Length: 453
Image (cartoon, rainbow, N blue to C red; front, side, top):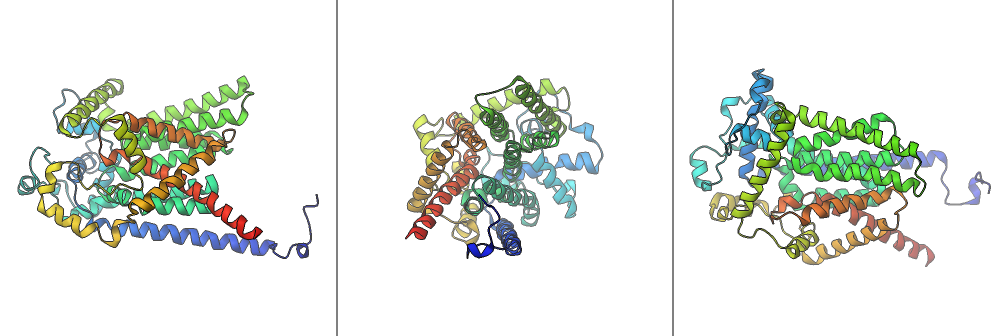
């Protein structure tokens, strides 16, 4: 077949110059779209209802001042025994990225360590915490929310890139829009908590896994994957879901690419690169986790033990926990698009009038995102299910890794005994991407019917 047909043979063909201009137009349109979403995310941080864990993260930002202002990183070393809510305990069981970036943000804004709030005491009522000075001033709270909101805005860009790689621009715009305008993502990502950073670096790890499967196989890409995985774990330990999905994606993607012929050279090459990523991940994770600096293996054991104790205590304190398997399945299906945002986990906060006033002002505002409702939410869920079916047909292609991501995420949610909405956040970008893939198929089918009519 002659690939160099004259332009006159096809009235709709584009000249090279036209093609370049079109690509430039779409590039500008992409940038404008992502900037608008980023501005929207940042524009709502001032009126997001307060959460007590924000004060805890701001309290933990003392570690930044200790290490970088007072130049005493050795003071961050952790040793047992661990007392609940002590600096030792908090440093061990929490990620470090958000507290340190909060500290950096406060430092840039002119705040000093002595002005940081005391830790929020959950056994006490909201009013009692406020009387003891545990709620930070609004100006300080806004500054502390900036790092997480910026990370969230960056995660939108990364998800847009993932959508482009998976199914093109329709998937990219649909996924990034649904994700950035999700009321639940906006609520949690704007707060001065760990969600923004773990979503950012978790999605970055997924994007790097995709690029490796598409042929970017040099050692630099595998090092970058390990770096992103380490930053994900250092952001929040539950980010292990993204790490497992990313590493599983490259493993399954590479195997299915060559299946059923798997030469020993390919296997050794893959395992060697995978080990390189794992080593880099652990180096970054430990380097950015002061709670692990002192005897890392022993502290990792302490981390698992203390996390298990905390989960057990949360399940005992939560009247609706542990959830049944049926409840967890319903949560998986309804959380991304049907469920309304949950503004607090502690039931007694329903009696905190200032919090209720903040919720009443924020929830109906233009800054709270797009509330889909039951009907539209159900339709979006069905389109996401269609996306799963489309990807399942590509089992011999690198896209099959998306099913690995889905499997890991669902497995983590099926074993989670708590009904808290924050625990479902890892599902939201995945659901948005699957909906984007389904929307792409529907758009193409509609275009084909129009052209054939």
